[in-house]
Image 1: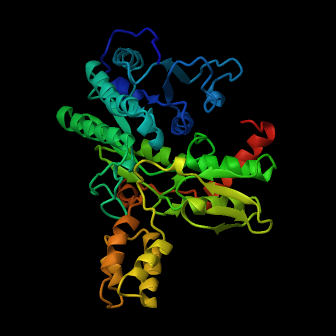
Image 2: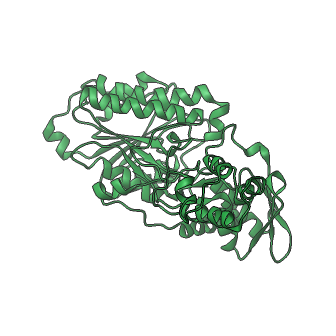
Length: 437
């Protein structure tokens, strides 16, 4: 972790007139996917952008190099970088005191859900207490009335979901150390907003991807692997739960929502999502489709494989080591639910049709709160075994961002198909230049 902080100017106050004239943003996590897109966006809005990055023995500014005034020499222009860390309170106070930002975007985090089980204490320290340190630093510098604060919250707060889709009023039930740490961060933001009248908001962002996504995230792992297979550099790769479902959008769309949230007259927490759900399996199929391959599936559970329809070559395998200790979403599939029906007292084709109806409705943005409502659509008696199975089946993340549309006028522009295509094409170009990337 960084032990170095740039010298700080010791005066704290910012006059209201100066605040109106200045557009100065401070971004934690500026070197990450969201931070780099946000920095681009704010620079296009003529902001002075400051970023906090951790000290590293190797360069970790690849996503923002093009934003330097001179990328070859890393000469700073309207983007300025400061060494710091969310685990170092003193450093945060010094940086905020020096920069005197008008907006702070807290995007820095240990953001990998599965890794959070292995680095639980570190995740809590950075993602949870780190948010408190930032808010406390704002208060220490006397900027509670002049700074607008954005907290990168997450759909992982919902974890074991209580309703589908999830909105701002859906109860939280995190299912990972990452989700639990972000839950603390969410409530400490609310607490500072109410206790100190601070303009502080939580953006509950559902999954958002791009070619800049970290290579250890499943979407980027898929796009990289498909690119390598297309170029003959790889034959097969392994994934975890193929039926894991997510609400995937494009990070470039989502950073605009972050900015819009801080341009409002009153602070409010909002869900940012597409409202459209796709499985890892669908992501794989769509990625291969862009390189002219059709994937067909064979086997089930841990023995399931994805093969090229034309050649029969196995390109995708399932490896249990990629499963989370607690899966947020359902491992149930239509096949598993069909098996439950076969063992129950009701075995009619109508039951299987109702299961198909459930699968269809759950991919729609309309709110569905339970199996029984759907199961009774045709007047049939409910199948209690299938109802129990549905309790597991419905656990996946799908966002309802209607409030964001009403308050911000925000809605996603990039479709799922366009997102996958962009990621695959970018990784094909990357692997052509450097097969070891």
